[in-house]
Image (tube, rainbow, N blue to C red; front, side, top):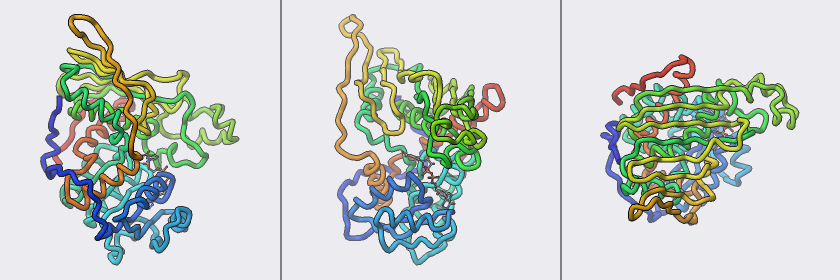
Length: 392
Ligand SMILES: NC(=O)c1ccc[n+]([C@@H]2O[C@H](COP(=O)([O-])OP(=O)(O)OC[C@H]3O[C@@H](n4cnc5c(N)ncnc54)[C@H](O)[C@@H]3O)[C@@H](O)[C@H]2O)c1
């Protein structure tokens, strides 16, 4: 099933290296010192070969308060934005984590790569496909490592999904259903940058939809998306009587809400595969269902997940025939030995130090982004759109 991406051509070969050589410190900076930056800093602090040297945020004083909160001393934070931090050559930065809201992912990543710095970019890759293309062009020009922050990739059960598909156990894959969602789960607290178009650009689609897509697309080898028929809505986010708004006493949240809280799509992938997708921050339903991968020899049922944390609490099930009988094989859950965030950070550091292939490469995630972008465009146009990705 694996299909090599044409966009992967410029990538270096993968070389595994897990031994940590702490003799030379990797100099790390944090761009955007909000909520998720906290998880990055906690993981960087555990790495013996990391020195956190700088951080910046658009909000004055936020970066300094952030490093104080996480107990990291001696960090330079006196920068108005990422450009000012990148311009400070005395920092000699090797790596940055881009932890900004989605709308500034592209500019922060491109500027960092242009400055010759390896980048760990939070998910989603960005907001539009055009931005993703520009990011990849900067990556190619720089020769630096760019990894996108999909931590579920490191979960052994998620990896099992890929192993099952790649083993050929399911035969030829022709239909996939994926997605996820919450009954009432528009991000809080009040003031979050997740719900406004000017900061997030994408709602449930970009926040959790990208994970559901990655779960199945990574398993089947990231075939190219060809067409998308997309739908999105905002019935809950725009409603001042949405139960959570009332509970926290902020009905005005509805006025700020300017992204999707539900999205669905029907996507044609290269290789004759149909992908049926839906995602919700809020809906009148408990779950939008399990993910399923249907093949000519067998099908896989993946229990509905919380998307972002990469875990499910029920076993994977394979429906197939054994000795002419229709059977269902349960795959026992595998316990995780490492924190997913630690693995995300460590794999990025190793690739940056060794100059090896990105653990979560843009050459795959650009297809994820193309689908998000396609859904948004198709929903706005009210018709199917073709996906066209220019040469990088
Ligand atoms: N991997 C995960 O599990 C996970 C979880 C939550 C959020 N995220 C992703 O992380 C990103 C950030 O989310 P968050 O909740 O931390 O947002 P946040 O709003 O709490 O923090 C983002 C910060 O970036 C700053 N910023 C924006 N542009 C900047 C620039 N040019 N220079 C310097 N600072 C800049 C903002 O001022 C803000 O303080 C989002 O893209 C989100 O999708 C990932």
